[in-house]
View (cartoon, each protein chain N blue to C red):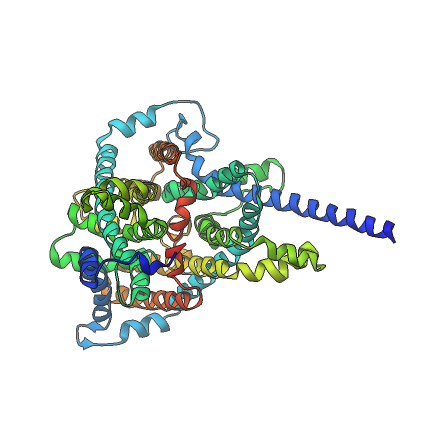
Length: 284
Length: 287
């Protein structure tokens, strides 16, 4: 059905319908974000770039920046490697009850508190925790390992939170894939492996692109997981902003870091939109 | 010749079966990985020890009792509940109006508008929290309920718009036309035709807003001020200092509530074409 036929509000009417939300967003979202820019360029003497210089020149901050990118990259790669087969498995399921039940497993994290889930990893990873006790019981290790407050625990926690964001778009693309294309490939002599490589995988790339970029963008600005599962030595950009604002009261510097992170995110959203087309998620 | 063909055929079938089993085992492990952390709090909440351990020792409902009676837990819980209800209402109304305009209006620059309206779930929450904090400080909105509801609604409206506009796109407009043709007023048509048809979407969006607000930590932490606290802030501060089994009890209640909501959603969605399980797919772009 042509969408044009549904449209029936005039420009003015549509604007009127949207205006409450638009006003709210402009006043309490756009303006505050834009306000970060003047804050970040300000010091006692007026205009300055010192906060940006500081962020990019002090080794501690460069390390945090690098760590944030590194962790986000690994989280994205792991989410893809782990999530793609799961999405494929879900899309291949024939029985709707099983599929629904397993889909509920993927969606369950959305329904339960992120604090609770992150906290569960503390319980699993701590020195007297389940994983150490199990490993010691089976004599894999003799002394408890230090798993918590390291990049390892942050990565595991983030993969757990972000995995559904990769599985869902990939699943959605695979599910709507035209099966006849696979049949045609098989008919023409491709074995299942080559049919997958040549047909299924390339056609699933839009879903993969959406999932991967989404996971990466969310990972860059993640706060709760690094705050709980990462110690002071595994600080990420978001926890650095929090520290600068709430502990050190260093607003101007925090604003500069926020601007860097914000511009990176906006840049990625624009790229995301170019590659995947964000508006596609609307009509689906 | 025929023998060779035959053997290669059986071999191929064996390969597929083997691959499928491997895939199934792998997927099973991932499902366990996804689900376990959500449930771990349940057994831990009944431990008799004064700190959290796994496996739990003994059995007691003491921590649930404390959660329900201790003012230090009850007040933040009730305040969070209030915030979540108000946020859900505000985001649903604003998001619904915007979705109507997006789907049925003639708007130039719709693509850019779409991206802008969805962007709050992609901009890091800590940046929104910090930025809004600066503006609220000037407007004396720190610590006010209105301020928190507005900030949470900014985070929630993208879900509402995603889910409801997807529902409206699939909506068969001839239903409304038929109602109008049969003499219904526009308001009646809206209340008795439009709303019931997209009800599953509205419910899914409402649940999403409710849970997002109830579980929101970062924005609340920046904007709450000093007089009050929300449940996530309370849990978070507990996690950083001493770990009390009340946290596990609170989590268990949270999980139980989520389950009740999902199951009642499944019941409500029965008979409609949409399955609720599929609904959040549209809103997969969370947080």
